[in-house]
Image (cartoon, rainbow, N blue to C red; front, side, top):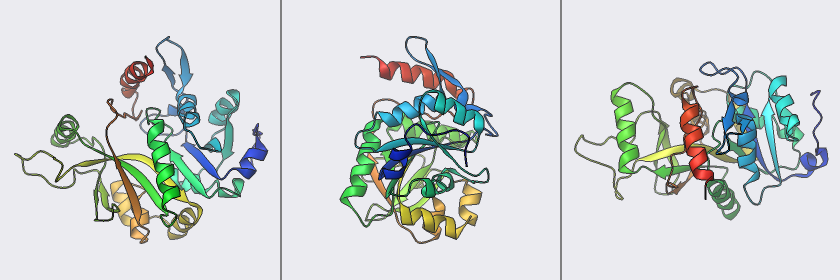
Length: 279
């Protein structure tokens, strides 16, 4: 399927716990984003996809890290830094579909982690906690991460909402810590004079997922659904299909987990990345 041979084909065939980093070139807001240079504290630039790959390599207890793409330019970049490439069809509608498209190339994989290709600031500890959660709860089919919004983060989200911008995705849970709903609106509704607290937190969803193989197969079988389309949130397909999404709630890590969604995000991400890298 690909002109780009993997440097560790045996590992691909044997790996059971895998981080897959979906990456596409044709972003409408930021074409070529995976190849955008991100500089560290020394001023050294590496492509965003390489920085994200390195974030995956920093996670303990993972058998393999691979980039899933349909683009030869991204594939060439990944093989250039000796990474594993999984070529996927160009009609994948979202990252979850792209991870699912890798199943035939990962025949032994029974736990797959979707690490966003633009989320190089995702703490390795978050991924490790998610994997540990899945291993401790073998009946859980899909899991993801949320963080309790600090007052500062909540005010940022609220200000974005007033200005008509989407500042992030929130999630509300049932009593079993399963998602009731995800939205780009702030959930739950809070009166103007009410701030989130321990009794009524606002949970900011982090786009990091872990799936069982069967859950991905069912996701593809269901196909696109109205809510995921209108909200632009791929995880809503699981809820539509009646597949519970377990949400692991963690605390903020002392720095914002900003994604590279637009060219204007690059300086901020570089600043946070540099500050985080310093002792």
